[in-house]
Image (cartoon, rainbow, N blue to C red; front, side, top):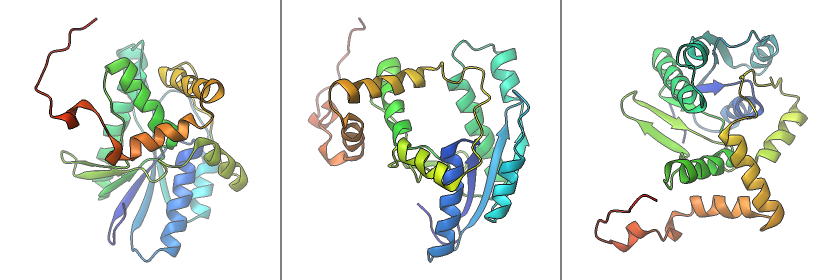
Length: 233
């Protein structure tokens, strides 16, 4: 994911995963043999005023350059567009804003703190709401922005991220999103928990292994079937 000379823009939300990512990349910078630069950026969506002094202090303590950039994303999503299902548009606008900031900072990599459960939840969201077998990858190059998205924590179970964040006493901030805890992603989190509780205890690990082990894929495209039209039900 990381090579000599890279400049990394870390997307910081204030949650446990992004703060853990900032800590981890700084720790790796100290002990690895690769020379790369770090910059941490938080997007202020303009939703609710939030005191992030503790994040500034933590970033300074571990010697990571950190800044918070004000945006009007919250106003666009909730007031102008008045989205009933705001997550997709909000995520798209946040990604675009962060990639633009990375360009302005001269960063060629954007690091995001998605964990294992994020990968699995996105897989089920795509499957059930878009009829697609899809999820985000550990590394994605965006040619239009000339930046590469990296997700170093994709194999880290969320429960471990939570435990490490508590042990390190990271300055985690609660989400200030109006729909936090009431999204389709939360429904997928409940679905995965249901599968683990009622069917296969390690269903989450098995699903992640199925996603990651591309050599075992056995979908129809591998069978070289002729194109066909599938009638919508």
